Image (tube, rainbow, N blue to C red; front, side, top):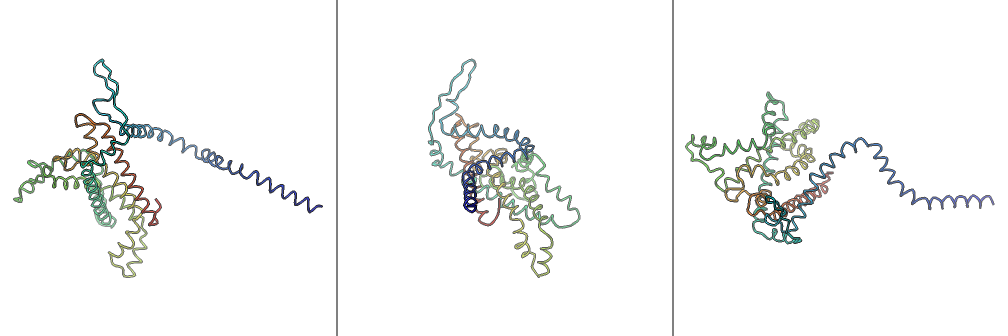
Length: 337
């Protein structure tokens, strides 16, 4: 009889566990959230204003731009006030028609090809030069601190100041570069007036502006690699190239993946260099996607807000796709990012 009572009690307890199990499971998740909020309330309080401001500054324009990209809004049919007369908006919703028109437009394909060439060239050259300079500055030699400060200087100077300085250097008649060439008996080069040369000119300026960031990031990565690895490899008879290939490159993989992604996004949207240096010229030879979108919305007449917004949304989608594919490829290689 005692055995039966014990078994019934055990069965009842098990039944209670079965009945109470789901309720405990449902209470666990809110409990963890409450514990996280109570434990890290200070952090949540500190970031809440930032999240709110970013949501207002970025969220609203993004939603507004997506909406405008699905309309036929132009300068002629938006809501506006002329004197005492208020003219209501008359633009209409057109769905995805703008996206179809843009993606089938030869101008968009032309701008996209040059933007990709511009981005890949700038990022590749900047990475190679930044890594080379970082390797040089990672060694001990006299005046290393002075060289570091000089190489970081382009990063400290405001971008528009640097671009105006380069604009002066590139001046075909009075520029310093052509005066140096004239001293060597070489004719003046139309740096910003020839379509092909202008492309090389804007790439050179963007590389010059981007090298300091790349160099500092690579230098930090190099200093995080243990020196014992190089000493052991040197004792085993590894050449400098082998040490670089088998120690430096793997040691910089995580840093390289981050700076390449950031540099790609920044260069893809590098509006100041193109606009302030060439304004997309000569003709439209150096026009990239972002400067073309700006031109349609603020320069061309009548201003086409819907098409400009469509270009902006497509640019965002292209960068999101690139970031997703890039992250997936890094994950396959074992990188956690």
